[in-house]
Each structure stands twice: as C-alpha cells, then as structure tokens.
Image (tube, rainbow over all chains, first blue to last red):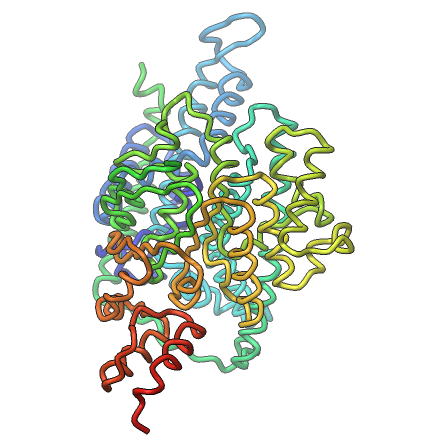
Length: 277
Length: 285
C-alpha cells in the first residue's frame, strides 16, 4: 500500500535528466519554484506547465508516477482550494446559504491549485531523477559558502542523506510489520476513527523500536569506519560540471527570464479571468 | 486437501522499469498434516509464495483455493483464513509491541473476537508449547533474549490455532544452539498438534532431518517438489542454484564413489553413522 507514495523516491532509468549534475537539478527546482510565484497570468502558467511537461518527457519517468505522487497532497490541495474559494472577499459570483463564491475567490483557488500541483510535480521530478546521495552532494556543495559563518554544512548534508536513505527502508519495514500484524488478524482498514488510531499501536511501536535499533547500528558502523565529521574528508566522485550541465543552465535562465517577462506583461490579462472572460 | 495453488504468477511493480516477476506459474497441493520444507536461494520467490497462502498478497494470475473455495472471492472470509493459515514472518521478534509477553500472545486470539478467558487460555497453551515458562508472562517482550523473543512471536501465531503453520526462515540470525532449539520445537509441535507445517529456509541442513517433502524454488519457478530422498539425488542441479544437499549426503556420495556400497539417500548424521557401521566389514583398512 505504501508503494503508491512516490514522493521522494528515486526512479531508476537512464535519461538526460538522470545524467545531469545534481547541482543543476537542485538549482533548477529552486528556480522553478520561485518562477511559479513570479508568474501570475494564464499564459505564464501555461508556459510553466509546458516547460514541466517537456522536462517530464525528457526524464523518461512514466507520467503516472507524477500523478501518483499527487495523491499524497490531494487533501492539502482540496483544503487550500476550498478556503480560497469561499473566504476571498470580492465580487460575488455564486451565492447559496451562507457561502459566497467570489470572482477573486475562484481565480485564487484555481491559481493556488495549479501552483501547488506544479510545485509538487516539479520537486518530485528532481527526487525521481536524482539519487539521495547525489542530492545531498549537491546540497553540500551549494551550501559550502556558509561554512565561513560556522554553519555545520557537512553535518546537515549527512543528516539529510541519512534521513532520505531511511525513507524507503522504513516504508518497507512498515509494510512488513503491517503484514505480520495482519497475519495475526489485525485490521488496518477500520472505518471507525478510534479503532483506526488503536490499530496503529501494533504498527507504530515495533516501527519506532526498529528505527532506534537501525539508528544505533548505523552509528556503530560509522564509528567503526572512523567517521568523525566532514573535516578533511574527500569525495570518491567529486561533482564536475559537463557540457550538458552548462546548456541546462542556459535553458534554465532563459526559462526564468521568460517567466519574468510574463510577469511584466501580466497587468493586461489577470489570471485566470483573462482566460475565462 | 487444505490448500491448492493453481497456476499462480506474481509480478511486483507491474508496468514500471522495476518490474520483477517473483512467481512464474506455480501449482502445488498443501495437504493436511504434512511437514514441508520450502527451499530457495535469496530472491527465489519463496517469501512471496508464502504470503500468497494466507491472502496477504494477491496473485497477478491464477487462484489459491482453501478447502475448494477461492480465497480472493468477494465473500471469502480472509480474516478467518489468516487464523487457519498462520504465518510467522522472518525475524518475527520485530513485530512484538505489547507491554508484557502474555498480552502480545493474546493479540491474535483477541482479533478473532474470542473471550478474554479463551484468549488467556490459548496464550498460556501456546507459550507452554514453545517452552516459555510462567515467569516470563508478565515481562516486557523487549527485555527477553533474541531466541526467547522469537519463541514468543511464534506463540503469538500458534495461539490462533492454525491448521497450517508457515515459518519463514525461523532460524535466521540465531546461533547454532538457538537454531537447534527452534527446529526441535517445530518438529515436536508437528508431532503433537497434527498440523501442516511449511518451513521456509535456504539451508537444506535445516530441513532435511525433519520434513516429509521438499519444494525447491529457483528464479520464481518451483523446480522440485518431492520427498527429500528424491530431491537430493539432484544435488548437482541444486548446487547450480546456489543450494546444496546436506553435508552428510556428500560424504556418503564420496564413500560410494570410493567403492563402499553405502546408500546415498541419507540426510542425517545418525543415519550416516549407522549406515557406515553396517558396512564396516567391507572397509579394507
């Protein structure tokens, strides 16, 4: 059942996006998220959407994977939409009982939904094409300047990579414990909320115990191999920019510049009413 | 006939780059009151197969019948099936969660909706049959030793009174003494309780002594399904699968090749000793 959550899971295949330097992908994701907040018009979002679709095609990751990842945030998405739809003051569009849907409300709701979906798909595209190790390497490299202000960059990167590495392990463990308890007649599909919470105890207790056990083992294994933090540590595979990474940066900045251009011209067509009216 | 496996296949992650066929058209019968060894190398599909038997996984194709009824039919009571086909997972001690041993063993019977007294009665009986003393009942399961925890976990499944008990690598991670204890316990239970036991292992030495029948899995196929004697005649093929016959079988094989007319259908140390002694007159020393 946890197989359906793809958020943050690496998808093994060979594509240009998989081969890109992780620093490029990390900056691209950050820049894409910023771009989503820069554009505010229908053509702008359309452009960002097309860019995203192109990237998904390039990644060779099946589109269904992205959609499956969306399931995890469906609740958040609906909640945001509902609140924006009913609670934005402005020109009334539809009115029933005490609820009013305004023009502005509808506009913001759609915009938030699009923004949030793109945001999640965009960032899951990075984690789907980048292994956790590469990702933390990139983070460490990019945070390097902060070392000067005594930020424990290496330690943060190490914690991140361990945390990410443990996601699939803990998911597998959850699946295993769940099955083991189901074999003893446990029922995890109960509709009753109280029963549902109670049924989590046989799952969560062993899960925490095993998480602590694994943490202990890992710490021991790291110490046994003389791990003592980042000082003077070298990399087996240092990150080196290739030609394709430079091209990727150029495309990225062109995309971002286009997004700024969309913003600058957007006063003419407010989103998404420009499209509706 | 308790369980019938009808031509089942199973694929993980269908339709993705990570697609893996774990079971490829497997058919078998699991009758009442038989001791079966399910052997295979890591990744051969044996753990997947046993999870099919109590309905935790659903085959991609094919059917599993319990007393003639398809276990994935809509009106089939799968919860009851899980009581009848008890599955003890690998490292079962990792599933313990209650504050004391007795409550943990009672978890299964409680889920079956039995009364408190009946649950307690069953838990006591189950703990007794795995050789756990009364003094352990009130202890926290987390304070027990590895072997004790495992026995408590097995008791947790036994308390559901299964007709078929499946143990997935019950000796994994135990020292030789713990291994012998658990295996001895299992064969003793088999003799006392008249149930079918399926012992999953990657080691022939573990099972050869006890079982009536051996099923060998290799690369998602069921390659042999026969008595131990007949399965071990394929010892060369078994070696190619990364498995082997019990060590004594090799010794007997070697003796025969060297001209001593001993039987090679021997899997335990005691049998081997008796057989060699029986032929000692022919030893030209």
